[in-house]
Length: 101
Image 1 (spheres, rainbow, N blue to C red):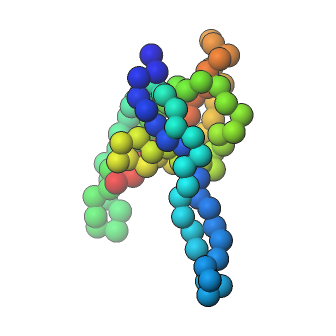
Image 2 (cartoon, helix red, strand yellow):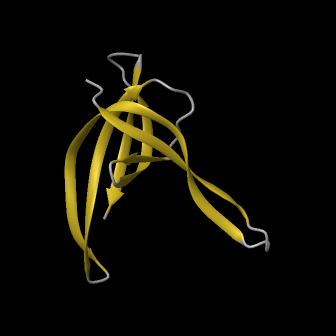
């Protein structure tokens, strides 16, 4: 059941009026998803605890979503690691995602 509203975002680079490089996140599309959290990992990096959340998000099939994009769900920003087809139902696809906080 697609019952979570998510926003697909991508990084946009450019330059400001002074010619300095800029980078910002822009919204591409908002859509409904079924989010599964199969695992979470907590580790220490540089003496600070870091939590990593992995998720699989089932969405309707689209051709404009790539692994170079991000998913915003609530206040958590996920990095899309892979875009995979749903082999049982070709109307859908899975976004394999990871977020660190």
